[in-house]
Image (cartoon, rainbow, N blue to C red):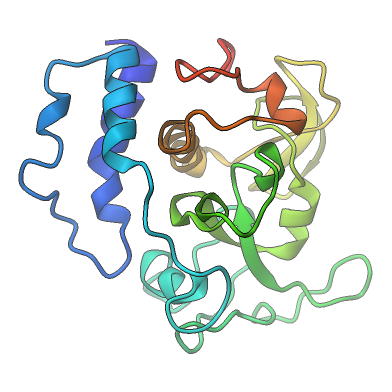
Length: 230
């Protein structure tokens, strides 16, 4: 089994367990149609199962993104999992957005570092419209401190060749595989999270017209979609 097939299978097992307020059990028969499939056929079959997902409203309030994060990304110590830096933010009331980290960290502009919602697979890669379900798809959204979120921008994910910054979690620098002068590389602990999230996005939303920097990372096709290096 090639690497893309392995990740697709891992993604299939992962999807039901990530649903907010849902059992981690895979519904009986949910993936029966995938038996014996691999490569392009496996990706297409997965697309048919997971396409047109129900998504939360984007932002705060009941049944919004932060309402879901309360379940999907809360750590035992009562803070949110931050995959982008070591800053910690107390969860607070369900559905609310943490306003600042618990030591009052300020950024270079003197403003408090807050937590916001990060599109790991950048929204500008498909047009940024906040009115479609793709924008609020929970599988592509993570709590993040706004400082790292801003620094990461809509850069492609790659191995950093020449490093310009590293907060211990997120590296920024030149690309190993493209001509991009600015890419981001996540900390090792979360590379699997981001990789599976990217595989989900190109499978659930295959057929999207990829734009902006994504054209160095993605091809305009339904399989494999990821460029060879990616």
